[in-house]
Length: 233
Ligand code: NAD
Image (cartoon, rainbow, N blue to C red; front, top):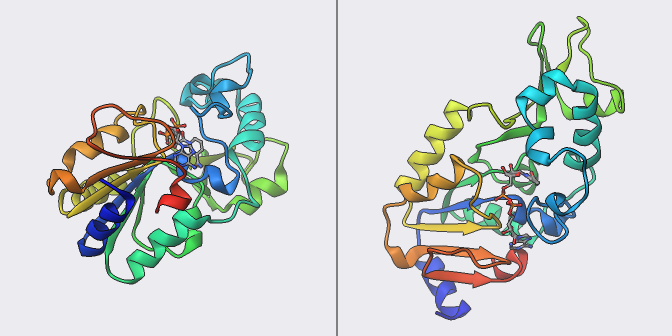
């Protein structure tokens, strides 16, 4: 199919769900994990899966935040053409939900309202001792130190670390939206992080309306557009 044919299909769809990953935000300057210049290609003495694990957070809180502040927080990043197009479609009543593995909050910054954040958000943070909630600004204020609550407890980002379970409300909302979609666009994700990657299997719509947009080929899909998601969307 040509881009024009995909576009015609998208124009006819009424309940598009977008399922995305880190590749959606690379055009905003946030590195993904698995591209050639992603975080996995850089040299760390500890792999990112370990650095971003719950076990590492509690055992080496100082080193966790060193990596987190350095690589996971991009406070100046702005929504790109992909985020903006998805927000437009929602406003027009064509898109029912964005399901994202990203933690950067850029879909909301672009104006999207119905966003299911499977891996949480850097914008929400909670004291591990008293449960007080904080925004990102408080963590940035205390950077590069370990962020601490008024009570002295460590403030932990509400991002899902390796070894933690996905937030229940986001999971149920995402699965419901995907199961009721008449088009599922999967974009900017290597589909390697489970259980999130398995959500695509809940799509019940027409097979020709399951479309993958990615910089690199993903096996197992008939309808793929290879290229930059900001341009293609
Ligand atoms: P990934 O790094 O495994 O894969 C990203 C995919 O996007 C790759 O296949 C790459 O080819 C593609 N890609 C990169 N730039 C693209 C572009 N401009 N247009 C189209 N495709 C592009 O990412 P993942 O599958 O989301 O899994 C990584 C995990 O890391 C996720 O759980 C996510 O939460 C987390 N993460 C989030 C952010 C963020 O919030 N922005 C950044 C890095 C990692």
